[in-house]
Length: 381
Image (cartoon, rainbow, N blue to C red; front, side, top):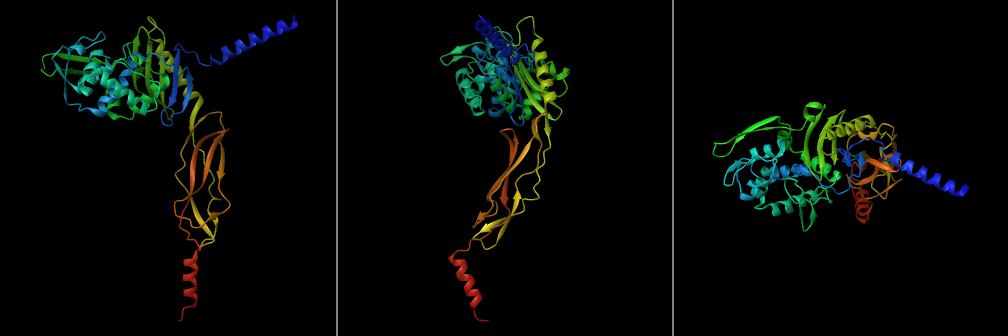
């Protein structure tokens, strides 16, 4: 009987420990990630590599592709397919034309689904060809679990499966997006007005990224919602010397539209409270010269490659600096040859390395050196 009780107590303890380990952050989102943009390091993750529908957060990749492959001053013509897209929509009409740049503002500020299709068809001739292109682009960024079926993120499927990605993949995409100045300019614009090519129809757009006005350091972002995906968001925030990317998927369903904002604020707070860039200096005064075997000189001068830069660390982490350097070098040695390295370690993880290189050439004492030396020594005055 005691053994049975002990068994159930053990099971109960295990269950409790699992619950505690998964509840370190109180988030509404079923999937979330916080990435430090410069290093790409994951600061926090919850099911961050689980494949899920992601709604209009898809449009960050659509926007980036258009910015990199199209002339923004060109006119894009509206097809029957584009004009028939469901809400949320600008209301384009078959046969109309719009400047590509204007459609991008409609895409990112108001999340218009018809703008996405006009742009996709303009760029590659069809939605199918466009999706093939941006899926390939996503994989180049490391987003290997992404399969986009539509340029607007509406729930859809094809022979490759359903429209899906992961929080981690979206963070990789946003990391690339915020390096594009035009992307930042569009997604940070509060209001924008434009007309169709004929000038007969006028439109105005308002940015629906609430964090731009409610969170310090908000850089960019995109919301999303479908009945399958729930409320989603991908955005970037810069605070306390760190540029962070926050992604939340399935962060509630109607009427809980504000859950995603609460989740992002929780993630950013976690990042700033627990991580920092810290200046860690290695003493390189002892790395001056190294003995050389078989060289025309007895030693070689060395230099440490690169400059000291801050390292992203948990505030509780301590860095151990390790120097890997041989006792001697063999001639010949060429300037720039890598002789060793300095490693900045946190436990078993190497956070940063700096190469130790030869600062000069040292020739080898070979046959020709000995011959030349003998001739010089015994030559007549």
